[in-house]
Image (cartoon, rainbow, N blue to C red; front, side):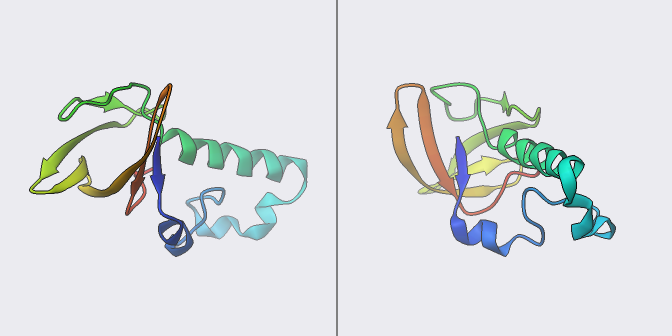
Length: 109
């Protein structure tokens, strides 16, 4: 899983559960239909940050659960996720089914 830093999430122009269209407004999330909309938006964000392979090898092109093709490469001493060149801060945890990478930006979702 690719996990953006908390500071990155706080700095987003819209939160992951909000719509890309700012004209929708906060009222679009009221009621049961609004909760469903927010849940779908959040799911889209999370799926954009899940890589369904482990290990995720350098230069191996993989589609996230959201369907976007990404890969990583070393740039000097820095790991970067492409095509956006997102800097990997570190690999925080190794767990039985994968790793959690903290990154300094969000995957385009």
